[in-house]
Amino acid sequence: MGLFRRMKEDMDVVFEQDPAARTYFEVFLTYSGLHAVWSHRIAHAFYKRKLYFIARTISQISRFFTGIEIHPGAKIGRRLFIDHGMGVVIGETCEIGDNVTIFQGVTLGGTGKEKGKRHPTIKDNALIASGAKVLGSITIGENAKIGAGSVVLKDVPDNSTVVGIPGKVVIQDGKKLRRLDHHKLPDPVEEQCSSLQKEIELLKAEIAKLKEGK
Image (cartoon, rainbow, N blue to C red; front, side):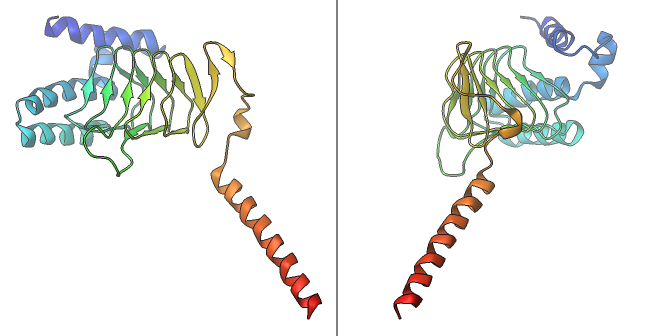
């Protein structure tokens, strides 16, 4: 596909996904997600030729102007739509398929423990909502949806919806696997505090028994 046809395809995605888009001129000049994708293509071309310093410089300049950090080593398919985009981070070994949608604040990162392939693989037609963190060398299946603010550490099957911390599958192939209450998403801090409180109460009871024995 030619350069200009590819650029038009990228802009067409914006019109499909964002009802606020009005003209090609406006989209061309003002959409940071679009600029980040275009900059990444240039940086990735240098990266593949092992011109790492130039590739990294381009990616950092793009980050400065768009607020979106895409490592030049990441592999990105066609028609990626990054909505708003501020704070989006995409790691070096990340692989993204076609027709993927990513909202602001999303991290496709590593856990800091792996070597080699250490970032996620996002398959076609996936959607990752605002603030979600997808970490490690895991796979997000086709047509999967990751809820806002979720932290995903394990593979997600095709046609699934994941929410919570850590992320849990609540819908798969159109069937609810568990009740989806957005106001009752798992809170690991609250759960840990509750667990500690129970342990303290048990210890107090044990101490009281020991005092009675004396």
